Image 1 (cartoon, rainbow, N blue to C red):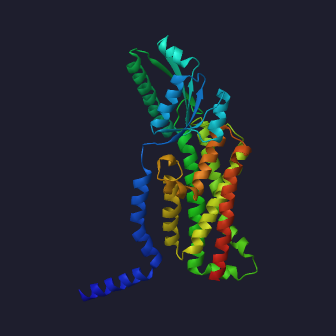
Image 2: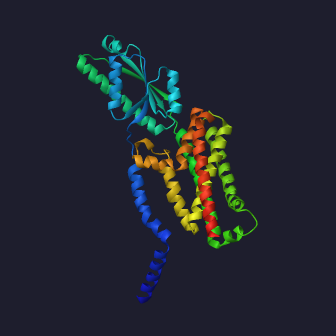
Image 3: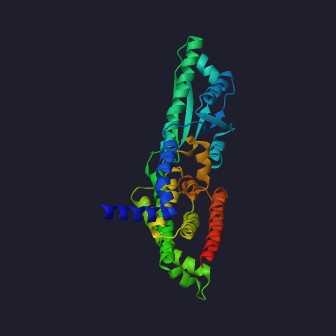
Length: 367
């Protein structure tokens, strides 16, 4: 028994001295509880909507007020033509649009009928399905109120258009997410583990005192994993296009360049992590909890960001996966060009430059 107590005492001393591992062990349950508790939800609020009102009569105005007051939608655009709706989808992050036909009030009161068109952005299938159900419920509720007030029985015909993904194929959603996760795993995780191994074994110190420039040493370790990640990305794209019929409506060159930019950003995160930790185990744990898990939960890949508390929406902004998934969907599904994507690329490059600068400074202090 005395021997057991001695071993236990030794292990507790070791755990308490390893402050990074101790922090991770205690922080992981808290992080998981908060992230899963606040991010996993199927309810949406204040989704951005575009309304094309071709009637502009009293009933169309009441319908717009009904949509706004529902709490599910936020009308941010009142375009003048159907062509402008497509512009809103690409540039204003609108999730859904409706078209109110001409003579809307006359159709309800005289013809006892009305046709309303719903246009859904199905680049995100889960969000589109939820919002389409919300919108249909609001429209039917509006018609029920109209019939009750006017003692009539006017039905409403709802035509639904699935923008960007008419077949509602789920592959449109998971391919960008898989590409993102592969890059995070291969580039960020393997880079952080490799560099941490060099630090842990003392090899990094020996490399840094050689005549080779520090930045060459670091990127010489990282670039091979970027190449492997790029090859994996190409394989995923080929399988997606040939087997699952995933479209690439935009420029293939722009898509590949976007992937390279994201790989550089992911590698910079891996470099930053390796500069902060001392062992491979710590590097793996920090990468998985600090980068991989937020990529799954805070990128919009599986769960809509608009429904999360404002703090988590801000937190998502500091992770590159959010910007990359938005950009890659725009290229592949919407056919967007550099004019629509330059801001996302600039954000990713800015993150990478800042992280690389901090990491190299941190590595200097370890010499």
